[in-house]
Length: 217
Image (cartoon, rainbow, N blue to C red):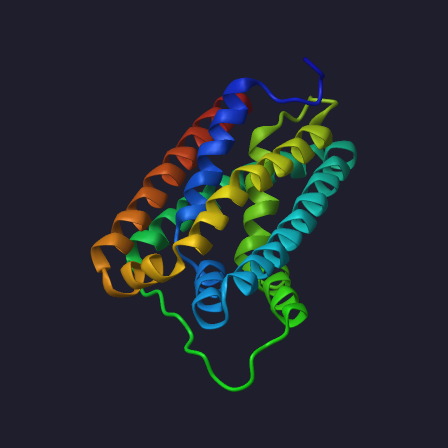
C-alpha cells in the first residue's frame, strides 16, 4: 500500500465523521435545498459544486498549514490537536443546546444565474468561520506528529471527504422537497440528527484527549 494512504481504521473513522457532517442540517444544506426547490435541480447541483470547491480549498490550506507546523513548531501541532478535540466537544454541546431551527429561503425577485449560485455556494464555505476552524482543527487529528507523510495523508483524507460527500449531497438534491419539508417541520428529525452529530463528535473528542494525554505523559 502506498505510504500516503492512511490505515484502513483511519479511513473508516474519517468516513463516518464525513457521513455525519454531510447529513447534519446547517446553512449549506439549507442553501442547497432552497436553491433546488426555488430554481430547480441544476441550481442545486451547481450550489453543491461551489461548496465543494470551498471545502477543497480548506483541505489544501489545512494540509500545507499542518506540514509547516510539523517542521517548524511541533509543540504548536500538539496544542492544535488538543484545541481541536476541545472544539469538537464544543460542537457536540452546541448541537444539543441549539436543537433544530433550520429555515429555507423563499423564492424572491429575479432568478439568479448559475454563476451566481456557484459563487454563493463557494462563499458560504470560504467565509464560514466554523468550517475554517473545523478543517484546521479536525483534519490534524488523523495524522501523527512523527509521520513524514502527514501532508499527503491529509490530502488523501480531504479527497475522501469529497468522495463520500458527493453522493450524499446529490441525494439531498434529488429529494430536496421532501427533505426540506421534514427538516423544517419536524423538530424530532432535527433533534435526532443533532444528537447523532453530538454523540459521534463527543466520542471523537474524548478519545483524542485521552490519547494525547497519554502521549504527553
